[in-house]
Image (tube, rainbow over the protein chains, first blue to last red):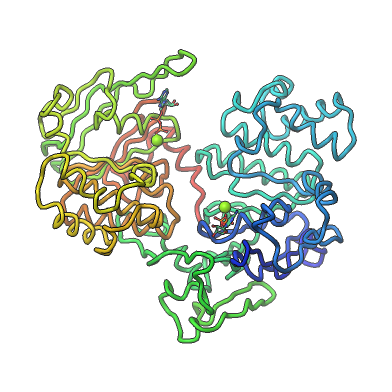
Length: 321
Length: 259
Ligand SMILES: Nc1ncnc2c1ncn2[C@@H]1O[C@H](COP(=O)(O)OP(=O)(O)O)[C@@H](O)[C@H]1O
Ligand SMILES: Nc1ncnc2c1ncn2[C@@H]1O[C@H](COP(=O)(O)OP(=O)(O)O)[C@@H](O)[C@H]1O
Ligand SMILES: [Mg+2]
Ligand SMILES: [Mg+2]
């Protein structure tokens, strides 16, 4: 990707909270046009709340944006009114979630659900919107798209539902797609097809994508760049080629090492002791300190800065050399 | 494989079938005539995509649901023919661990009672001491017995479920997606625990998972299931190095690997 073109999305020092409880802190990143950026991390690290905040879909209250900016198309989404945000969401930014069954409306046909954003955001007439919906179903690889328009979500398989979700998400040719665990509920062979589809749309439509997953393999396969989140903070970021082959943060290193496929069959896995600390149970220093295999004294008492060089960024006092 | 075939199997399943009738009255052939054998001390991995019949197969072997036909020999004895007290006694040799340890642990009972329950049901004494031993075995603190399941993380809950499954000193554990709901860092802790238990207790195991990398890591032998049938079976390394069946090849090709 062209590093000089201005980013589609820039998130600056974003902190999210639930009441007084800090969920994520100081999250900063940007996505270039047409770039596929991965966000990985174990459950509870704050990936989904980050995605939801960009879409302004956080359940506010109790959740809220406590600090930071979300710059998109010359606006700060963090400061946008609900009405103005409604025009961005589903229009300029598309979204797909893990469970298409809960995001698709069971009482409307697939055709009507794809046509809806075209009618709302593009002012299309219903007939024209349905014609476009059939084209979109064809684009996402659903056979006999005209017939599929009349189906209800429960009449589709899991993979087909996720394809339909993608069709809705890209209906208004957004510049940015936010995909939160889009293939986690799918079988591996279907996952491979859906990831292939996202890659194709990105090539053909120049779509930028924030791909959230807990699966490093998925990110490594389809993303240009990735960020690793731990206990509410981005702790490392870099091109996937080097991030996972030469991780510098001790957590990234440990995550990569613990994957069964990176070990000899039957060998003892280099397990990471303990578990991710919950919000509110994190100390003053690095949240990984208690599980780290090479902590320094200051790791527990002071937060390592997220230091950036032209290629990678890292928050660690004692990185892997 | 060097004499493996000759060793008397701990478990031998032949011609197992199970059919459901779904809500609309349609017949679903979930398991269509499965044969498998498990040697003592062996881990057999069963892998396949969702809906291929893995859970149904595991539950039928345990007789948590009745198979329509087929035989199950456990330690040479016909497990399918048993009923009443004979079934209850035979069942002690086989225990199950599930994917969702929360759903399978009674939320209103303390962990000590949950782990000790199988002992109570079978009228076995010394529950207190055995529970303490089991907690230690699965790497939980002794204080865990006085707490409730919801106070524990997913990985710890899976340890509780494993401790409970071990209470009656079974020879065979059937684990249905035991690490699928866990994060990688916790998953590796549980995989290591299972390997330790297998080594120290000489357990045999049927390990069911949709995750090929996990199956490859934990299994001695692997059976690949598709549409209710086992389409390929063999030594784990042979299957992954040189899959014979197209379906196995397509599954392996679809695993997203770290570059
Ligand atoms: N509605 C909510 N109220 C309070 N806390 C929440 C809410 N939603 C999420 N959280 C907390 O925010 C943290 C991050 O959650 P989430 O973004 O879902 O993690 P991830 O997607 O990385 O698994 C978790 O500790 C979670 O418990
Ligand atoms: N209680 C049930 N009633 C009807 N069909 C069922 C029932 N349980 C499972 N099935 C069907 O049986 C097949 C096998 O299911 P299952 O054994 O759960 O597969 P797996 O564990 O491999 O995902 C699937 O087609 C599933 O929809
Ligand atoms: Mg999430
Ligand atoms: Mg199952």
